[in-house]
Length: 251
Length: 267
Image 1: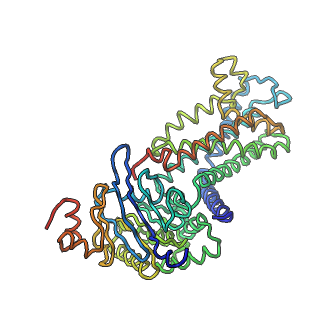
Image 2: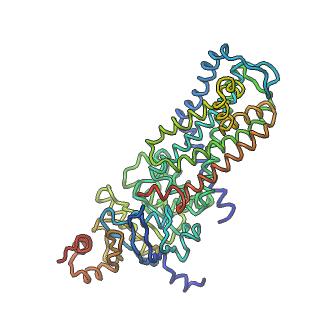
Image 3: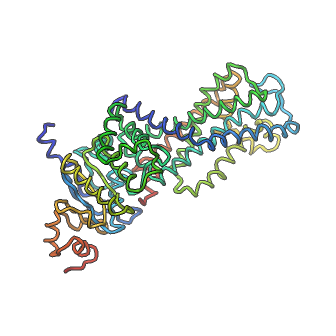
C-alpha cells in the first residue's frame, strides 16, 4: 500500500450497517465515512443508537448486516488490526480508581504491546499535552471528573490510533473542563491529522468545520458540514436543525 | 502482533491483578480466615464424630484435620475463582472490561490472562494456608509441597474457568448471591472436601454419585494425592476435561456474535 492509497483509505467506513436487539431495530442501514483530519460529530437524542454504534465499532457486539472498516481493516474479519487503529473514550469512566495515573496508563500500553521505554515516552508526551504530567503519581480517586477525562483521552492516544471514538466524554463536567477537552480534541484533528468520531448532544461542542451525522431512531437522517446541514434544513442554528430532524419541527 | 505483544499484555493483566490483590489486605485476610476457621474449629470439633478408614493416598490412620486440608485448599481456589468471576462482572459494570475487550488481542487470550492471574493469586493463598497448617502440625511429605503445585495450577484453572463462564452469564452484580447459593455451596458440600466418598455411600447412593461426578471433588482428589506425592490419573483427566469444557464455553460466552454478550444488549 503506497502513501497515496493509504491517505485515501478512510479512518472509519461504515457501510449498510443494521443491528437489532431481539427483533427491535436499533440501527438501520447506517452509511458514513470519516477521513483523517476530520472531526465528525454524531448527534442524536438518547436512544438514537449512538451507544449501539459505538459497541459495534469497538466489537463488543457483532453486526450481522453491513460492514465496519477501520483504516481498511474489517472489524469482524481483521479484528486485531482494526482495533489497533482505534482509541476509545467511553461514556463511563473506565479507569481503575485505586491505581495511579501512571499505573492506569502503563496497563493500557501493556495491552497494546508497547515496550517500557516507548510507553514512558508516550505517556509523558500525552500527559504533558494535557498538563497532567505532574499528577502522574496521584491515584485516580484523587482527581476530579475533568482531570479523569483528560487521563482517559491521553490513554486513548498512547498507541497512536488513527481514529478516536468519544462517547459523550463531557457529560457531567463543568464548563471550563468541557471547553478544554473540546479544544484539545479539535487540536488533535488539525495538528495530528487524527480522525475523530464524537457522540454528543451538546451543540456548543461543535466547531464550524466539523462534519455532522444526524442519527435518529437508528437512522442517519442527514450528514455533512454544519453549513450544509443548515442549508438543507433551512435553519439558522444546529439546535434548530437538530429539532428539525428529531421532532420534525421545520422553521 | 508478535510474541512480545502477547507477553507484555499478559504481564500487564497478571501484574494488575496481583497488585490489586496485594493492596486489598481485607481480601487476602478473609481468603485465609475462611479455611482456617474450618480447620481450627469445624475440623477440630468434627474429629471425634467422624472415623476415617485407611484409604489412599493415606497409609495410616489420619486425623480429620489432615483429611480436610486438601478440601480446604480446593475451597480457597473455589472461592478465588468465584471472586475473579465477581470482579469480571464488576469490571463489566464499571466499564473497565471494555478497555480490555477493545485491545488488539484475541479474546481467548485476554480471558486466559485473566484466568492465569486468578490462579496465581489462589496459589499464593494456598501456600500461605499450608504454611499456617504446618505450624498446626498438619504436615505433608516435603516433596508433596512441590508436587501439589501442578495440581493446584490445574484445579485453579478449572475453577477459574468456571468463574469466567459464570461471569459471562451473570447480568448484574446483584445476581451474584445466586452463584453462592447455587454453585459454591452445592459444589463444596457435595464433594470429597469434607467427607470421603465411601462414607457418603453409606448414607445416600445419589449423594455419592453426585459427589463423584462433581468436578470440584476430582480437583480436591487431585490435590490430595499430589500432596502425598501421588498421581491420581482419573482425577487429573476429569479435571483437565472439565477445564477445557468450561474454558471453551467461557470463550464462546464472551464471543461478540455468538455468546451471551449479544443477549445482554443494552449499552
